[in-house]
Image 1 (cartoon, rainbow, N blue to C red):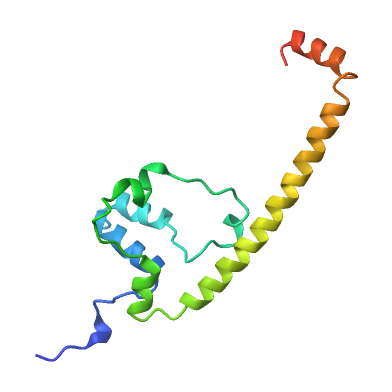
Image 2 (image 1 turned 30 degrees about the vertical axis):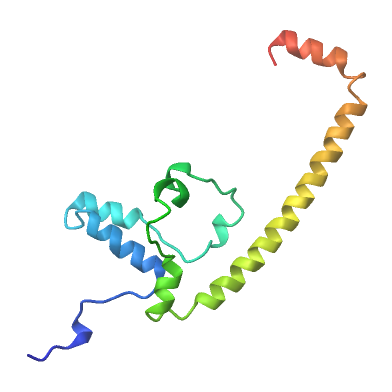
Length: 140
């Protein structure tokens, strides 16, 4: 029997599309509720522009070291995608390295600013003692 591979099934090579397709298999996407849920889902490679400035959060329950036994085998989705033909792994590695350098510079600047602010508060603590007392009595 001859088949035309252009008619499907489509095997996505991008990690974001792999995650999307996996979640689509977990959701009843043929119902209105499932369709709306998939429409709200957005997956990305790397960290896109509006989200790269937002503070990252760690979800302890999702950490590999806590969820998997050390004897279990695991893989990184980007490596798997690269093995099957995704062509942008090097680009994503470069962009991630650039983002980390910029993030480190921002953090150092923020830390220096915080130290200056703490010194300023410490130097004028005597002058602000009366003001802080009034504010504390007012409930602030």
